[in-house]
Image: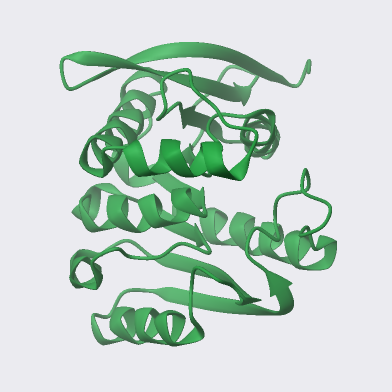
Length: 230
């Protein structure tokens, strides 16, 4: 890990603190920032690994621990944690993570992006809808909008990556989401991967992971952030 630095930190959020996993290139300098938003499992090793992948690509990457120390290994446990999550507070903590990167790393807010998977993908949508021009770009892996009306508030360029066979997101939702952004003039790209299932990017779940789709989605993600964050 000599090429990157990693550490657990606590950053200010709503008169409290939120823990998070920070990874950045080891070489001193100013780098664009990305907030990594967890799946419903929590801040598990997979999310830390993805955070490190972004650091190796030249980003200051921060994954806030939205469960504040809790994590799940089984779906029922993860479902309980996700249902108990205060969405409004989670979005506030994600935006606080954006501000932390801006202040501690010297990154203009418009050079900070967000990316999330599953529950994190939905939170990426919600964060984009509550961030206005502060957000540089967003990437959504199979995320949904609990209230579709919030989509009209999105201004940041948004990349949507979805599975063809997804119990959580209908292809109708994906189409409507894409059309809504086009009508608002928001730069966007959407890709639906044939033959894939929800969570196809997670390489710790071999029964669902799709290597070809995951590699393509990773390349598109890097290209999106490279275009809009620099």
